[in-house]
Each structure stands twice: as structure tokens, then as C-alpha cells.
Length: 214
Ligand SMILES: Nc1ncnc2c1ncn2[C@@H]1O[C@H](COP(=O)(O)OP(=O)(O)OP(=O)(O)O)[C@@H](O)[C@H]1O
Ligand SMILES: [Mg+2]
Image (cartoon, rainbow, N blue to C red; front, top):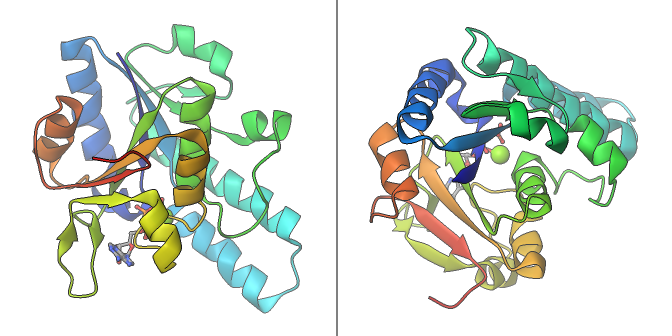
């Protein structure tokens, strides 16, 4: 079984520890995890730069994509997983690899170059290219929280678009999921047992963001 996991930059502090856990689990269960790195602190630098100086949306887009590479190299340090740059390399990637998306995005440059598209939509884009209808987003909160801070367990992508609600996902993701009939499960990566429960299809603390009726 192949699984696309977007690994949030927000998890940097425990990032490599979680990566080790995932690699061991993938090996034990003979699974294939494809890790899509977030942008984390590397993308914040670019955001600040683009606020202060005139950087074109194109330049900012590619710089932000390369910020994902920086986080990917960080996560790979300690030999947790190989870094790959094309979908063809997946066949030799073992039980877990980290996908650096620059070349794939350059070859198929169909995502808008705006700050609405970040690593969440890029993870969905890669999942879609691989024919996967779902992906897991690991982040540092329990899922999407409502105005009172309570966890929303299930939400339709359409509802997020209508409410203009972004939560902890990028603004483009709900629309991308709708157009491609996909879903995303948002889990707090600091609780590895929850990641396993999601993978094993068990009930756990998370948000299911979907375009299907439940
Ligand atoms: N309604 C909401 N529900 C949940 N989290 C929210 C909400 N609104 C804002 N957030 C914030 O979103 C953050 C998670 O998103 P963020 O983009 O920072 O992390 P990430 O996607 O894991 O990292 P990266 O974008 O670097 O990969 C949370 O830490 C939280 O502070
Ligand atoms: Mg984010």
C-alpha cells in the first residue's frame, strides 16, 4: 500500500523523530510512504521578503517550492529516507522516501503561482498524479478547529470554500480536492498513535476534509 504523507513544517522540532518512527512502521508493515515536505521556517523567510520587497509571484512560488526542498533535506538528515525528484524513482525508493517537488512542478506547471497554493495543495497534486484519492497531512494541531477551538471531525471541502474558512490548510486545497474528488485527513503528528490509527482506518482524533458526502 502506497501512502502520501504531507509532513508539516510545524513539526520541525520533533520532525526527524517522527520520520524514524514512520520509517520503522513502514518497514514492519511493508508499506510505502511518500513524504511531501512542508515549507516550515524556510518559507517564512520568503513570505517576509515578498512583503518587504517586490518579488514577482512567479519568483516567490519557485522560491517557496525550493523551501520545501530545504525542509526535505532536513528531514532526510540521519538517513531516514532517500530524497527523490521524479515519480519514476518511486519504484526504487524503498518503504519511505522524501519527494522534492520542483522538477515535477516545472514539468507540469498547472498550479497557480500564488500564496494560496502551498505544500498542502502540492501534496494533493502529487497524490492525484499518482492516482491516489487521499493523503494525510501531519501538522502540529489536532485538525481543523472551529471558532471556539473545538475539533471539527469531518468537514466538506465545499463548506470550507463557502465559509472562506482556511483553518490549518492552504486556501487552494479545498477547491483542489473538490475538482479532483479527493480527500485529506489532517492529524497531529506529535501523537504517532493517531497517525497509525488513521493509516489502519480506525477512529481517532483528526479532521477528515472531504468532497464526498459522509
Ligand atoms: N481553524 C484552525 N484550525 C486549526 N489550526 C489553525 C486554524 N487556524 C489557524 N491554524 C493554525 O494553523 C497551524 C498549522 O498550519 P501551518 O501551515 O502552520 O502548519 P503546517 O501546514 O503543518 O506547516 P507547513 O505549512 O510549514 O508545512 C496551527 O499551528 C494553527 O496555529
Ligand atoms: Mg501550512
